[in-house]
Every structure is written in structure tokens, then in C-alpha cells.
Length: 164
Image 1: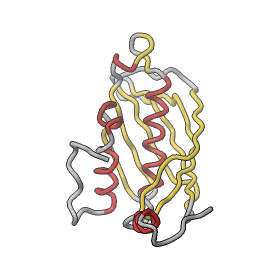
Image 2: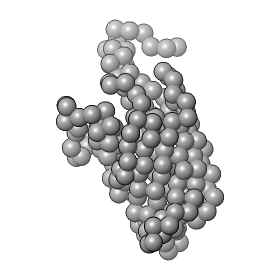
Image 3: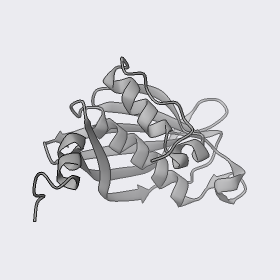
Image 4: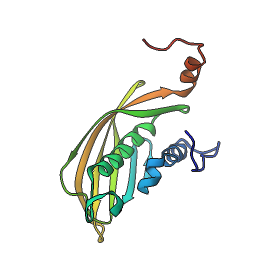
């Protein structure tokens, strides 16, 4: 992937590397995503409510709600991976329970169950008003596929057969 975002320094912590990888994604930058908190197994992110993503004045379309929920959940899953591993969403279900309106959306992602190949993760998305009051507006349950980049590179180079 080509990105104009700065890469994490080689001495960056795994959490800093995760943040740099997420913020290198064009969709994260387009949404104005920012990390509020990140630690192993937990990620909290925010996006501003932008009229460009609203289907009616001040109310975000479901696509943006899903995106922040996915970034938080799968980011939490990525925060527990060993160095050199990455992940990607392979399945997700979002349930919208209230309108996404206010000044920003805040999503809190967590790991439900981490294994070598797949990690089940979840997030709750809150609409935040001008006074900082949070209202739950969506919840997401996702599965992330974990990938060892060195093993993938070997397979692509034809040195190791991949799974059938």
C-alpha cells in the first residue's frame, strides 16, 4: 500500500506501529480518525461528525458508523498480534441502536477471543454531544484474520506452499 502518512519509526512500540498502520489507510484519514487510547486488547478511536458523511443534516450514514466500529474492533485485535503480523476483517455484523448525531463518534474496541489464525473482537460506538454526553448508537462483532507477513512473503516467493 502506498501512503502519504509517515511510517512508524523502527524503534516504535507495537501500539505505535498499529496506530501508524491504521492512520496510513486512506479511509481512516478521510474520516478524520484519531486514536484516543490504545493498549493491548483495547482501542478507542474518534471521528468528527462531518456533513460529507451525513444522510440528513447532522446524522451520520451507517457506512461511517460501520467504519469506525470496524477500525476500533479490528484495531484492538491487531494490538495483541506478535511483531510482523497484520490482520484484516473477514466478517462483521453491526447493529445500529440509535442515531449517530452529535459532534463526534467514539468507538471502543476490545478483543473477545484471540487465537493464532482468527481473533474475535467487538466494539461499541457512541454518539458524543457538545457537552461530552455519550449515547450508544451501534455495536459490532467482528472476526479478524491474522497473518504472518514473513510467511506470506515466502509463499508469494514460491518457497512454501500455502493452505489449500
